[in-house]
Length: 363
Image (cartoon, rainbow, N blue to C red; front, side):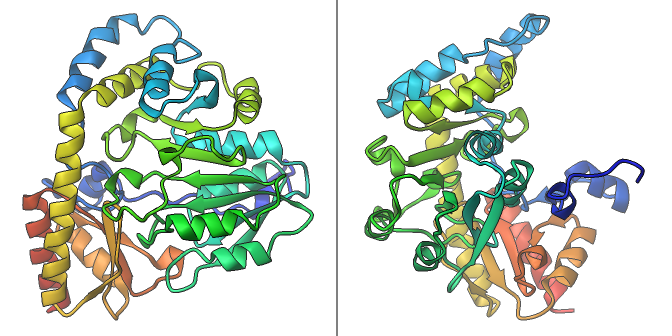
């Protein structure tokens, strides 16, 4: 390459998304594919979203409302916070990038679990900061290890709860003990992309008492329980001083008109929300029973997915299932070579998944 790349950028490993349906159809010449790889909503999205988006298609010659006024107000009322505490993003990873660029100077450190969502590391590096990785312990976030790695250069800490990809969680008591040991000048970013699927009431939920600690930034998304992954819309709830910095540097139209409309409509359909959670919980319960019958160990989970240990090279199983039209996720890139991550689907999808897995592992 004749153009010199930034030294930090040259160390970045590109984010590897789950296999798209269309790509698998092209590569393998098959249709009716079941995708249970990317933790998407198995029911699609609310019919109210469809109607609202169609009603606003005619407005797409106009720029979006930069403030996301209606969505901001909806979230403000839902969580009993001020509009000044809300930042909207093109997915929650947009807000991760804004936080990194807004609060990291060259050489500053950001702590994060290893492995974890790759966009933490990418965002920190593009902001010229240094990601500091703290390996998991027993498939869970090592909070003690995070505290031990805090240095004078530490500016932020990323916590994912429930954790992706393992499904583990942090309790209220564990989190409170942890934050009591974190210096007052460090931002604690709590990524709660899967919090709506939690069944255990002891699991920490930052919005049960929002803004109680000005250091805590909550990240949430409409991609999972609301089924709006393709619209790309997420939000952060945080101290107004942090939000002011992010709103100063974000792109003025980072959340497009249809994404804003879809998110507002999604929030209004509580019946669809409840049905999604019910479907996911029933799906997980079925998968745990059936995978246990196959003699396979699953990790406990409080999300909409599970990790299962095949005790063999999971990538080979993933590839064989792909050929049969079922997409799951190999965990090799996370360092878990014998594990698959499986998203809970509809009843029919889950049955086909189990039948396909049986065929592959019993060959």
